[in-house]
Length: 414
Image: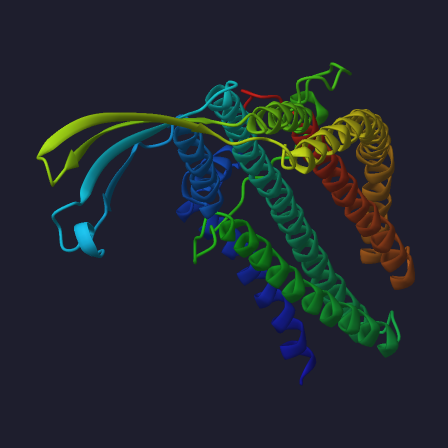
């Protein structure tokens, strides 16, 4: 390749790359975090699954309110015997209607237990939506970080192309050895490869985000927005959060289950009434009856013991969960505060100084005051500082998203 063609290639490539984002931003509207949350909440299969689970619990609750059905029976006696009981002359036909009557408050206990399970299912649905919102925030942040990294890699490539142009001019003028141009060209090629990788990462991040609402085509662009702790309530109390409310509802359901099992130990009363017809005389008579099981062996001892053990285990898990949530909240706040301090240090001190040093090195190299090594070293420091800033902002946003989920309360926005 001739020196002129080698010089023209990076300039044209940089010019084309500079035009692409401007055209895309003019034609396509960036997807905001609020819009991504709305799309996921409206179109994700998670929402329909959660609603179906609630419908299942409500159906069980409705079924628990029904009592036992009456029973009808027909009995024919003294049929096809011998002597006086031969044929159908002496048969007796009895039509009986029997109604089981639940005693001991079984129905009420069963309904309260089913209602408690419905409350658990409703909280499970809210938690499923909250988890979906957490996934949206995490993947949106990953997409924002990928976009920022793409912009970084594009700027690195453009700068590398410019350095290569200057190095080629200096080599042609005899002010730099040919090795300098070769090294600058290698740095430009490496920057181009990193740029292609960043483009693929940005596409993958947008595809992963769109997957949450079932879209086959990713959004063209993502709005640059970083979550911060300002969106999280400052209260240190974790009472009333979704996770804790669900555990408390589960404990209520377990306690209602104890009452249900105890009531189940009480035998039911079966009351019946009917009419009997004597075929031989043509007479009829009314008949009534009642029956009740004798709870000698089976008094539902195992069911009661299991329900009581379930309640004890649930109560223990609730106590542990309170401690765990408080510890996780404190740990998250500490980590986010440290990441925010890192963001401030990088954005206010380290990065401005690194950019200033790089600008001076580039100007000095253009006029022969600095070497190519000086420019590359300054560029490496500046690029590393910007990459660290993107990483720190990502950590703050991801931690904030997790904190929003951890402290989300019943009835709060996801």
